[in-house]
Length: 211
Image (cartoon, rainbow, N blue to C red; front, side, top):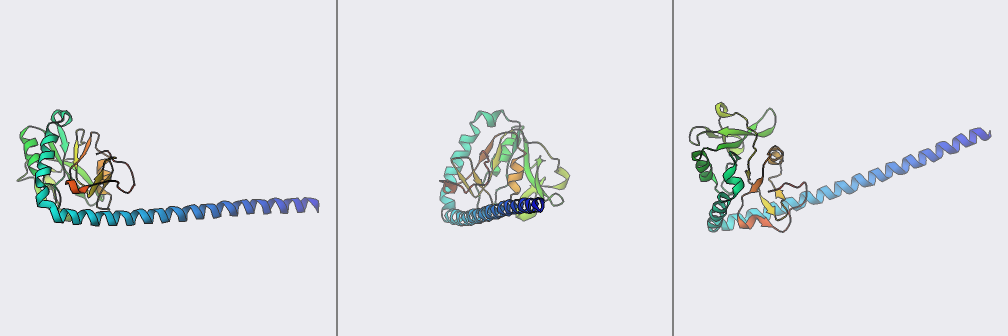
């Protein structure tokens, strides 16, 4: 009888501990879920605010972007790099297209992101001629055509677009995570190219991406 009682007490204690751990895990998951929901809301609000600023002052900000691009070209890391990953600017993004042409004329290897539906991911692909090797493709963005879709590993700087940036090196993208994954393949520096109005005090955290 005493042995049976001891075993029952032991099982009871184990079940109680297990239930407590389970309850703690549930509380932790609920807390994390709430935090992620709050971060997602913050990102939505920040994207909306920044896009509104850009739509208001985009033409006036063109001069500052040109000045920043000129400064970029003076950097040693830029001049010494032979392979550069660019982005194809959309209407609401700084127009860096002339910089692609200059880099090609200087004999550098120029790459642009190309979307591969099978992998559901962007891959850096080489471009040799901006007139003949690029077309409007997925999401209405200019990409290397299929015949030129030879992937390259960017070992020089990568010029990156984004909705917002902060001084800590954090970038807020469009929310799909495509460019975050592409950026992880770049072995060199990443340089965010943006209007002044896209620089904010703090981007809601997800992961650090040096730009």
